[in-house]
Amino acid sequence: MISEKGNILIVEDEENLHKTLRYNLEMEEYSITSAFTGTEAIKAIDSEYFDLIILDLMLPELDGISIIENVRVKNIDSPILILSAKSSSADRILGLKKGADDYLTKPFNLQELLLRVDKLIIKTKKIRNTAASTELNTYSFGGNTVDFNAQTAVTFSGNSFELSKKESLLLKLLIENKGNVVTREKILQVVWGYNVYPTTRTIDNFILNFRKNFELDARNPKYFQSIRGAGYKFVL
Ligand code: CA
Image (cartoon, rainbow, N blue to C red; front, side, top):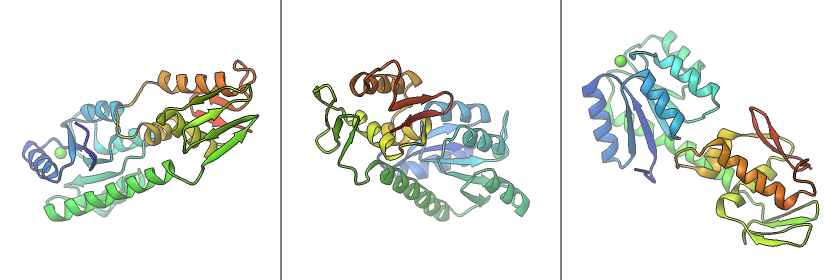
């Protein structure tokens, strides 16, 4: 189930604590996915975008720090809240250094946890919304003109057509970052949002379409470039 309020992954192997967390967050209308081991956590993270990951450090199969490393190396920027019985400042620093956003020591106060969860989720949503809704109304390049408000385009060859919401968002995102690589992860976050991740091929198909419509020679694209292993780049 997709919740408007936010998708949270709970990674915790202590069953009772896990249940309590899940119950209380569901009461706050968050949509919850459960993982009880490190492997389950990685599997969930690879198949869906989470607005927040609540992460225990001592876990079976794969520890919490390795999970943070795994998430960050994939450029997934979901906020991570560590929940751990390890209370030394060394553990706290290591977790934050690896890319966690917040740290709560067990046992914790439930009210405090809920407040922190709210804060972290609001922050990530703000970042996403800014990325998706800046002030770019129309844009012209190589004889093509795109109208982002009307979601239409007129190409250099005089073709005019409608853009889907996702096409329009992806075009906008690439154009706003012209000259820079936009990673697959960024595209998935901004364009696909809460949905389960589409395959690489889905984004590729969008790009192929852009080339077909906007490029003089779709096989030797000038504007819409794929950067192998990294993402896509709009070049003028
Ligand atoms: Ca544990």
